[in-house]
Length: 189
Image (tube, rainbow, N blue to C red; front, side, top):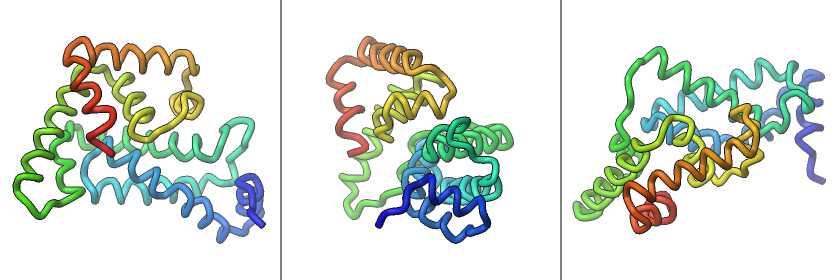
């Protein structure tokens, strides 16, 4: 018998915090990836992921499905705020090429090819404003629905769809369809 997220939250709110591990198990990898594609340092992403779940556990008694939406949206909001706080404190933009540390290759040709792809993606993302970049990352690489994105960002679904469309249009206009396909389908798959 599967226990619903609502039942898990209710259990946690009545003091059975061990049930929170079910939430952690379900979302830890997704939250880590969400954070990683914003900070591009494995250790930092791991720390911020831990902080996200720690904050969620601390605030579990304030969670309300009507106010916060889904557990997923709530966790992504906490993660997003953790990243924002981290970047404010550290005040440095982390270059995308630092993502190379996440995966290592045995052959030098693969390392060079990956570095070139990272540079192309970096150029694509630099074209976009922050909001568009964030929505494109969530939609394409995190494979989130517009409904999830709108809950996380506190924007309407229509606004998120428009920002995504404009962002993709800007990439296509500046870099062409071929590079757009590279970015959307090849790089992170």
